[in-house]
Image (cartoon, rainbow, N blue to C red):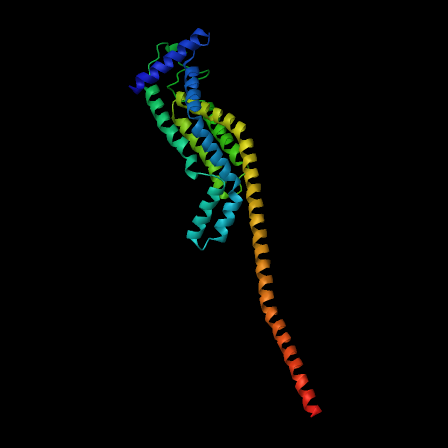
Length: 272
């Protein structure tokens, strides 16, 4: 059933490309990849926002991890509070990837069993058959470079060893897979990666600006609370000072009255 669905979509898009004067099954695969990417756009945008936000709060996250390294329970609590302050869901970054892999596997199975009605157009420039592996490794390099660019646009220059590892490990892994997979799957992956890069270029700057604005709001809120605490502490100290000085003044007044009361008695005794 899945094979028939994939075959029907490919043949329908191929017919459209043929009517436009550009008959190509590779173009049909590109169109399918773009359609899938567009359908997954809400999830992809959430993934981008979550990934960019995680990168922006790394300094604060490292500060929490360093400060509460000896108390994992408090560290987890502070980390969750930090996520809540910036409205970050760490799991949202994994969901689009988990959804895309089943789609890619289904597409792979469908294209693997696909028999084109016009096999003379089942090629792509230097690749004579889309079921073959690219022996020139051009597609391998394109997949690796595009994956690297997609990661670098979000992370920028890595500052942590784990970030450096992920920045280079993911492209190398995708390039290794591209060297083993048929050309049609490489075309699909390259297309969704390029579309993802375009989405990132459009959304990265606004998301970073929004994160900086939120960070400024949190800093201002923290400063205001700290100022309120200082004022409250100053008032408490003033009240304590009043309480400690007031009884002494009263005792002095009583002593003065007492002394004033003794004086007439002494004078009366002298008169007698």
